[in-house]
Image 1 (tube, rainbow, N blue to C red):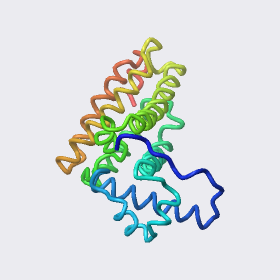
Image 2 (image 1 turned 135 degrees about the vertical axis):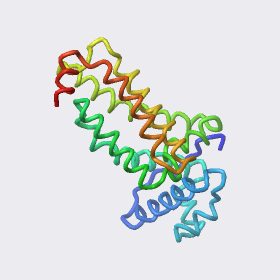
Image 3 (image 1 turned 90 degrees about the vertical axis):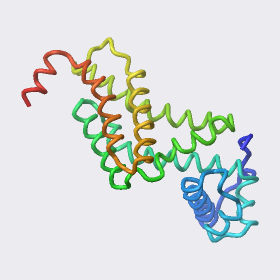
Image 4 (image 1 turned 60 degrees about the vertical axis):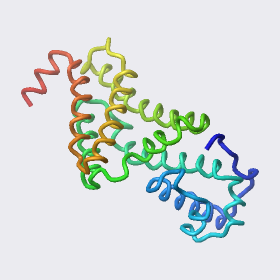
Length: 218
């Protein structure tokens, strides 16, 4: 994949057309997550989605355009899973609850297939600049939720105000991605638990003294 490609000219989709397009993207997303982008052909997408080639090319000019749609769908899927925990994040306890939910999710699947966004990043970031930009925007959006939560912790006096929320958020997402990679290889959620544990301890170390005492007593 060397360019972003483009979806067919914008048009008002009928309800049926929207469902067909969605079915194509979902089928492509599953294939690309399991087999990689390079290992997925348009013919395979046609077969998996139960559509025809003419339908596929009605919505997408080429594979690059389909990949762009897959990146957007996978980003939405991943964030849909994390947003309930991160939208109102305002305490270290909330951050720990998010960590526990992540570890449960990974452990239940024995790390299989890794992170949908991370998998796309490892395959496409050096092959397609438009894809890299989209994927980077997804990571930055994810980090923004964490950074906002950390700022709320600072506002309520739980964390040192001198800490940099953006840097802490990047560290947490980096730990998540590295933890998922090792969990995928080891078929265990333990690496994810360790990676996020280390990252969150860096945040906990910035708790103000009275807050540490309060946590220790609870």
